[in-house]
Length: 138
Image 1 (cartoon, helix red, strand yellow):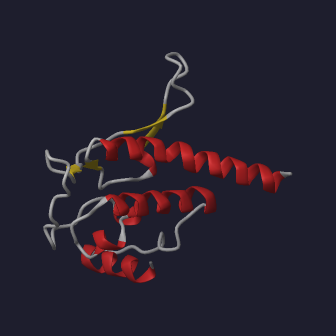
Image 2 (cartoon, one colour):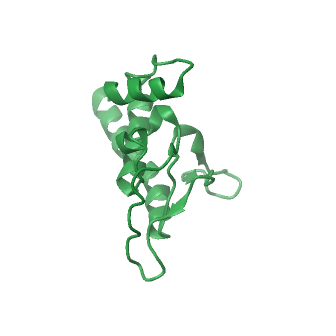
């Protein structure tokens, strides 16, 4: 019973946490900083307690132009996002897309369901080497 309940819970949790992300995508934006700390549960007082919300759009960027066409990749750019949840392309300092937000979302779910990410122990003073170590462990 516990195993089945956990599976049903995970499926529901996966579904409910993707809703704000896909809603953001539908507005032609990428977050580029998906992490558990950027999700919040609504308040019961306004009957939003069954919904998850995504916030902190300081690194957000449009991925479609005004005509609905994909913007061209800018190639190599600087680091965007949170190191622990960053996609492989983020660690390579490449321009990010929707799949990178989804990859970051997946890492959040792994951490929530397993308790930690395999590269959580990676630390160091030199940011470049930390990024490289995390990239290599992914």
